[in-house]
Image 1 (cartoon, rainbow over the protein chains, first blue to last red):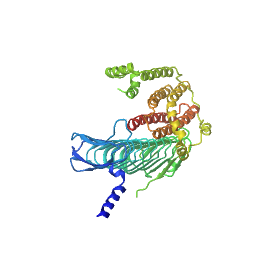
Image 2: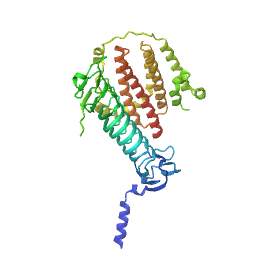
Image 3: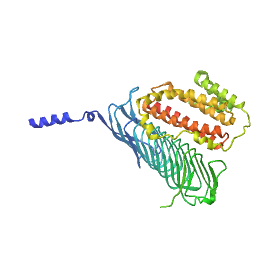
Image 4: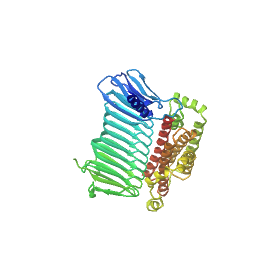
Length: 296
Length: 206
């Protein structure tokens, strides 16, 4: 008996203090299928996925020093997250696992929380400072804005817009209208089907695109100092305008006989096939590399 | 209505194309906001200057070969990242943001005096005013952004400024090169977008 008490005391003493300071979260409320759901959490992680129920469920844990969990609103407009005391910089972490109706419109605001959303319809709008953001599944429209967070989109979506200053943007899947821009971060864009409009822009980050365009599709890539590499189908019918003032063009895609220099220095203007699509590529001092992309 | 809202509608306000109610809303804001009044006055001065520019400028062609050697060697991001984590750079980042406001104003004035396309100069002037306003807002409250975030933003603003300088040098040698003009304006837009994002991020971090 005495040894049991000693063991119990020892176990109590060895228990990490952080565990004692953590709160569990287990909450939920009804939500309409296309509810607008606003989520706030500055640190830790946010994992969100959809389900075929008309409700929102939140499970997780948070350090008491981070703040207080809240969930409220109506069936059509909910808000949830971690509320920190006014004027207090939160310390510690909060991990949230959230389930929402499949068509929900999600809005997330964070500073550094890792954000992982798996969608099945609806839309997502994410604003962070330095979070790593990953969006997967299917969505009508997504928007991600961050300062130095890395962004990964593995999506089937009609529209996506991504802005980061120094983070890396990686995409897979099929996004019909993609608008992605960084200052120094690289844009590594892979598309698994024909897409209608791709707008890519950096100041110094590399731009790499691998994919295909609709017959009337548009690809615009522009950078000041970054390299541009395009992997496109060899028989793409397009009007091409390529500009590289400083480093020139490496062409392994278009027959040399079709390529025409001009009208200005460092410019190439020409048409291939039916010329319906448009490829407009500009780099001030990086190079442009065109490489054939063959179907797997 | 915020200063940012006013800034976004300043062109239309000056052109007189806003609806009466919108015009009145901006008038009301301007009465109370000295910063926006200064921005408006600066814009009016710059536009007046651009109207006085000559309508025809003879372009000098084929000067790129002279420009390229004058451009600085390309930055090495890895080395810069390592250097930028030093305490001195972190501290200097805040000062750099403060200096941006006056720097963009000087750039605008320089361009209006350089004999370039008036429409292009006017566009640059508008961007310069917008940049200065945003940089001033950021610099007003040093606690708005965490020091690490401020450092990242300062670093990326530095990249944009270097790109703008290189494009300016190229344009000075090859005026009226439409592609260069577009690329330069794109960098200016990126600078404004970055400052706007920094302000939004600051509201989250603070």
